Amino acid sequence: MPPDDSPTAGLTLLGRPTNHSEDTGLEVFPAPANVTSVTFTGKELTARCPVTGQPDFYSLVLTYHPIRSCVESKSLKLYLTRFRDQEAFCEGLAALVLGDVVAATRCGPASVVLRQQVRGGLELTARADHEGGADVEPSPEPEAGA
Image (cartoon, rainbow, N blue to C red):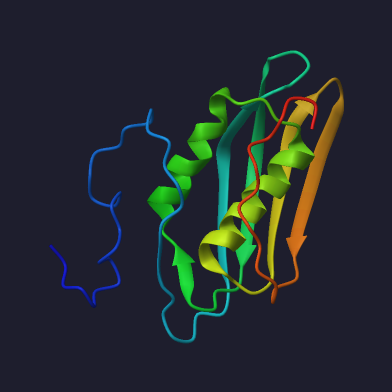
């Protein structure tokens, strides 16, 4: 078990087996000195179309400027897998992920860019931005049609 002053002291997911059925939140750790920007990219985000129920596949670029906390990567991965069975439009999903990251980290400027795989001949990209400085509450779960 890490000492209480270890950067991993409060983490509960890192180093333990993954259970994708758990509804996990984002975990954070103290931001290292001089880290001014963090970017995650991924291509495994999936949500269901609120109209057809078919899966939509996304690539994600999440960038934030940590002030006190950084997102632990395994918790982000597990957080993103929870959308697999939820219905959401691309735009609402981008806003939801951004709101949850900002609420967890209380970071400075942040952005989430989601690019939906081509469907019906159209590629959709949604960008949600946080300018920093204001407290943001976690977003409510996406509603069908939102």
